[in-house]
Amino acid sequence: MTEKINITLTIPDEFGGMRLDQALAKLLPDYSRTLIQDWIKNACVTVDNRQMKPREPIFGGENIVINAETKAQPVWEAQPITLDIVYEDDALLVINKPIGMVVHPAAGNPNNTLLNALIHHAPALQELPRAGIIHRLDKDTSGLLVIAKTQPALHYLTIQMKKRLITRIYQAVIGGILTSGGTVDEPIGRHPIQRKRMTVIETGKPAVTHYRVIEKYRDHTRVKVQLETGRTHQIRVHMAHIRHPVLGDQVYGGRLQLPKGASPELVKKLREFKRQALHACELGLIHPVTKESIRWQVPLPEDMQELIRVLKNDANT
Image 1: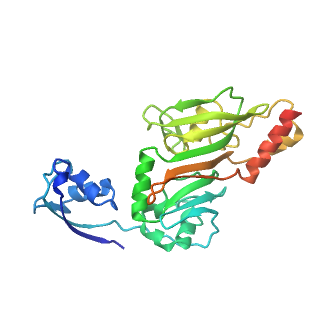
Image 2 (image 1 turned 180 degrees about the horizontal axis):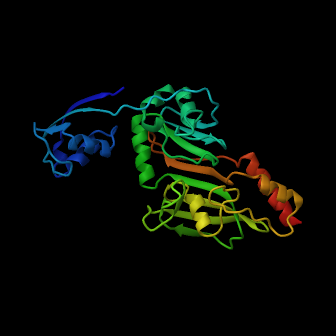
Image 3 (image 1 turned 30 degrees about the horizontal axis):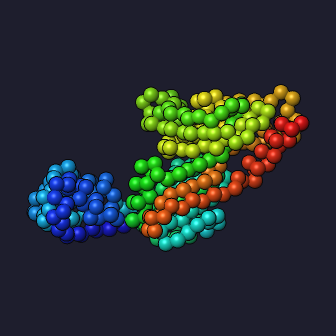
């Protein structure tokens, strides 16, 4: 169901000299500048009874009339799925996503997703784009996700994400021994042949991943990874690119490599671990209402803790 937007306002004199879209974005913080630009381009905005372009300057004192409609949101099914809620208030929700949960309905996963669970937990999220989900995690990556519960919060957090102000830190177990930390600054895009995969490619979008060593084992390393950008499968693609794929990655990990002389316990664990050993352990942002800096941490899931225990035992023996 679409929502009709009818707004009448006057441009303050102190906004003189600004672009039309910039001025309206400041006066209407509940709506994104992209949406406002679409309204202007589609003749939904009149300035003193005439149409203008988004980049045209204003002088102050103009009368603005906006008659527009918001796009209809898909109607998602609310499903009573248990959520591991780390934090919640009127503006946002922070979830510790379990292994195996898809974030958003898509072909092959029409329901039983995080989004279906969110709609059941907070029905008002049905009215927000993507039910307020700011960023995503792969199905088999566990950890922290933030969800906006209001349109202003969604707008504010989306801007933070674009400006790279939201801190996202992961832990991963990767193949091989890293001697020190570093940065992978390589563009990522869709694989030209295998369209379900991403790859490092010159025509891709900028992608920056920082990593540092936490702990070394005989033939594996546990690392802390911080994302500067948020491309699809970014950590998995970048780690595979530097020839240290995330352990258990069924898409980018290649054939399983067993360390020489590995204990039977480790061999069994490595063969059984069928998902990427990757967990979003820390999340930090500026609260959209209080403007305070907040940070959350969650422990590693049990399967990664057990994997690390076995790797340690093997290294010690």
